[in-house]
Length: 124
Ligand SMILES: [Zn+2]
Ligand SMILES: [Zn+2]
Image 1 (tube, protein in one colour):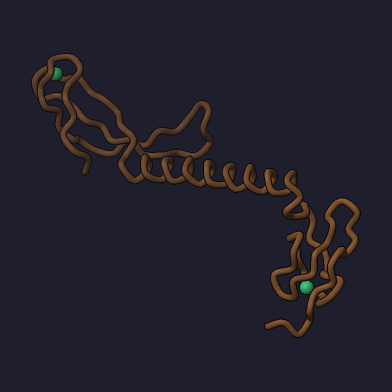
Image 2 (cartoon, protein in one colour):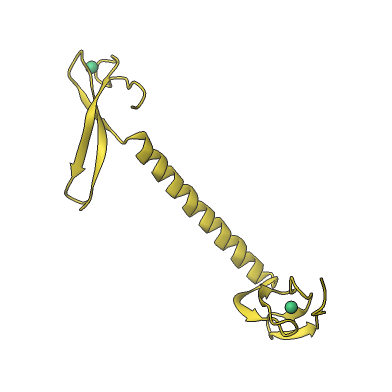
């Protein structure tokens, strides 16, 4: 269970009591919150369990990573390094997005989609 919380009313150490299931108004599902109570003054406080906090933090991290990936992708598209769409390499038939084919080295002008430098299909 979570670490000891400090009572916001009297400053004493609160004790974990039990999980409380929140159902209701806005959320059709239910999720548990930890109820901590103060043995001195009787104050009760609800906290999200650590697993839920970690799950939410991981969710935010993933969103940030997705955003960073998308920005980097758009930046490369703007710079003409990659195409927003996959296309077939005119030389080797590999599905590619890059200006330069990673397999055969063919170079395609991504604005006109014309091969400006044919690749070597036997390149290893
Ligand atoms: Zn208290
Ligand atoms: Zn190729």
